[in-house]
Image 1 (tube, rainbow, N blue to C red):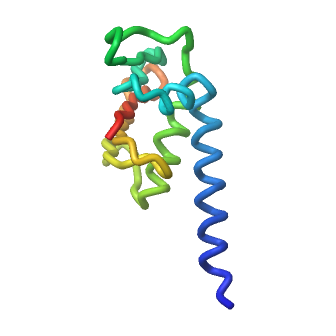
Image 2 (cartoon, helix red, strand yellow; image 1 turned 90 degrees about the horizontal axis):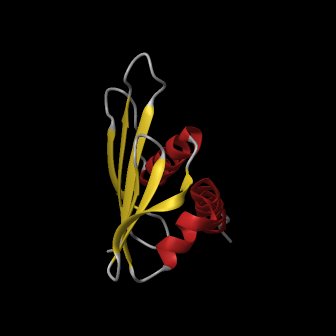
Length: 122
């Protein structure tokens, strides 16, 4: 019996849990809402939700910059990509659910690195 498939499944489950933890409960809940068509994390760390029924509005949440970076890096790891100054753009699908994901890491000195991300329903 080969343990590799079970190990891969365990690794994927762990990455999915890490990603949901980084997103926090409000973003994770929004991803499950069929009315939500876009979730945006802006460089100022504000999170915006675009809904079919009500349009675009900010969430009552500011995501720590470290969580924004963690989300982008976890999605990059899932698809086997790298995100850094020389390659700041990431286009991928979220694990498990397949929402389209766009992440952009850029640095503006002297401020700390800024992170932007967007997840859209397929």
